[in-house]
Image (cartoon, rainbow, N blue to C red; front, top):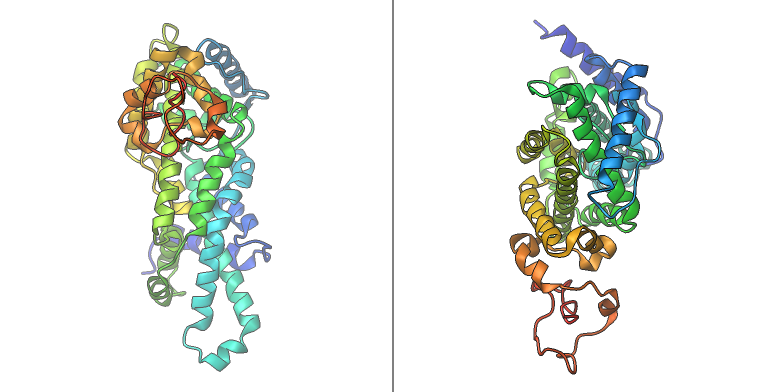
Length: 422
């Protein structure tokens, strides 16, 4: 008569968490979000990491780090390798999720509280409703926190490490034994090879993020830029909130965890920021795939098959991409990963490993979205990497030069002035 008792109990428990949570100083109640995320992972079991599993993870990360020395010019990024349970992943990655989600959540909470507080009230009543508006703002923050907690809990059940979404969620390289076990289901590959391959990817990400100082700020800045340009369809949000039935736990749970409260309307400014973010994430993933392939060549028999498994997982919009879109309203396009990998491979073939990795030396040297479509032009257009030319204004052909009229190969502002060092 009343539906599935377990679903009703889960919905009511989450609603009780939302109502009983203390007021948060920011736009999202993160204490409540973490509690809800832990409820989600506990529902399907979250065993502690055993000592044997911990040793296996640490050995795999250390060995992977040694193999990477032969495949990249960037030094080691594995300082204290770790093995995490799902709950530990939630706890240790929340600081970065807070940085990613707060800018957009703040806009959503302001709009939500204004919509809830002003609905049906005349102008004079709205002016006297200061305390009510504060309460509505807190309610909006708790609703967004509830949704983020649901998303983080779902993601924690699927991730294998700290770098699944291509962003640096932790300063330490770490793998989840439960995540590796989930990834391995259906694969006819020895468990130690799977663990080592995933350790290679984790260690490669950390080399990049720790030794390219501008990269972290560049990626997180693109998310913040997207948030600054956010606009919300107030009428659609108002319609959704008006339709909520607090006596219907199933409808309430669906509304709070279905992603509809964090779907901003994209503007031209947001689309430009999104393009920059997607391009950089594709370049990160393409570089990691290229370096891991080089490190595993001749050492890991199943490397090619595992690489294809990872690519399919990303190309089909796996859980990491879907949850990231739910949390910050950004739809990633992992189909660009193949183009990015082709560009890095072309750079390595033309300039060697050191020349390939030298491109990370400055953001102005990085390929653009257009360069992903024409990797050969980008490679041939920059035979030498001269950072001093980045600050020199371009007024005409260099005196005594070779008479070339075009610098760079990508036909864009970021490449202009770099091709005159032939």
